[in-house]
Image (tube, rainbow, N blue to C red; front, side, top):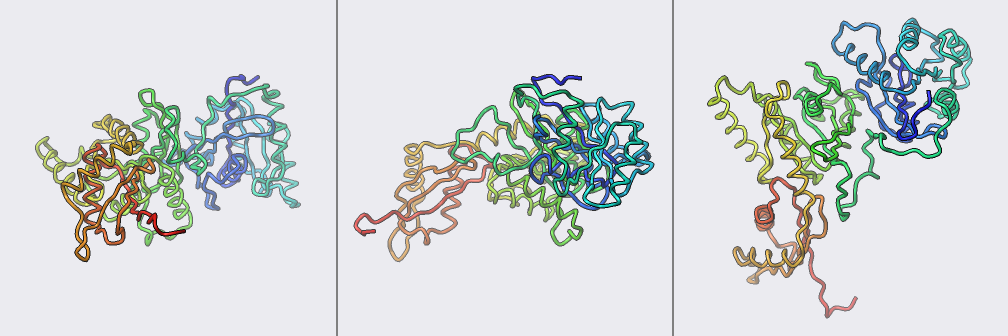
Amino acid sequence: MTVLANRRPRIALVGRPNVGKSTLFNRLAGRRMAIVADEPGTTRDRREAAATIGRRDVVITDTAGWEEAVGDRLEAGMRKQSERAVAEADAVLFLIDARAGLTPLDRAFARWLRKHARKTIVVANKSESDAGAVSGIAEAHALGLGDPVPVSAEHGIGIGDIGHALERVLGPPPAQTTDDEATDDGIDADEDESDDATPDPSRPVQLAIVGRPNVGKSTLLNRLLGDERVLTGPEAGTTRDAIAVEWMHEGKPIRLIDTAGLRRRANVHQRLEALSAKSTEEAIRFAEVVVLVLDAQQMMEKQDLTIARHVIEEGRGLVLAVNKTDLLGRTDKERNEQWRKLTDRLQASLAQVKGLPIVGFSARTGRGVEKLMPAVVKLHKAWNSRVPTPQFNRWLAEAIERNPPPLVDGRRIKLRYGSQVKARPPTFALFVSKPADLPESYERYLVNRLREDFDLPGTPIRIVMRKPKNPFVKG
């Protein structure tokens, strides 16, 4: 099969649990994107990234470990995700553990691949200079999938040979390729657009979905996509890594990022959960808008407030998404009364971000989910907004006239002028005669007036106080 030149071929990394698929994924992607741990079943959802293997630009897909048993709901879902990745792939890298040798599960998976995969390359991982690996590589010939490629994903040995093997099964790379189908699940600092840059309408909105474990984050993502893209289940902690999915919403590109649930730090004891929490925090850091999913029957818990305040401190737009509102009451009157109490409590708990968008829905049934994205789009627009300097200073003069700054030692603090220095989130610099003496209450007054007068509900607003230079002082 010759891969079309107008897109990157898709390469799926598959194999039984704990053979090093995520380690090879990170190696090919060029950075640490997938969580790697010794515990089998660390990877549960498909994760994609753009990569270059040999002379060819590709899209690689990390998958969960393939299991023969399908009785368990979680394991069955993981296997389904892996099989779907194989069905969509142009070529498959089938990893085995060369040191452990072939197992019955390897042989069963090889039989399945011979029937369902387009092109398969056997990759004998963990083939460092180890006598035990030699017999494992020799055994791999018995799979009937061609000569194995010995590599060490951890040490970067033999990676170039994978590129040669791909050329044998896919043909030589085209003279020129495009990135139309390239996707990248990484949350990378290089992708964080400068605060002073004009937003590019073709650039996807970075939208992270966060919350405590088992509040319905993955169910919400699947409902938005209309597809079972990530695993869901009644067990808390089903999602372990931040998974990004490219999506178009009414012609606007969105990068949806599903994250692992965040528990209180004191309750996190296992290394794998700590890595999942770090991945979630990183997703928040590089998001533009964050949807905090809450359980309508268990809110507002202390951990919900902790996550919300962390998002606000990072300067990200925050939408509160209240899931399971269908369980609030039996009648519409009961539900409306419960909803009023919940929204009042939310607004009181997060008074520092007045007008925070609050959307209620049921991710399970889909009722009310259509209200979420309009709130996200509106908030993202406010988060990117700019106020011209002349307009800002006219506003500042009016705000001071309505409520003058307080007196300090018998002299009034003077707010001379200011301007917006950054967007994303809106940040303003004020030149003040005595910045250290301006009380926080007056700063809150200015922030609330800014939010109200310039239509910035729920948007974090930052004010930086500066003291103007004295022109008569040299140096």
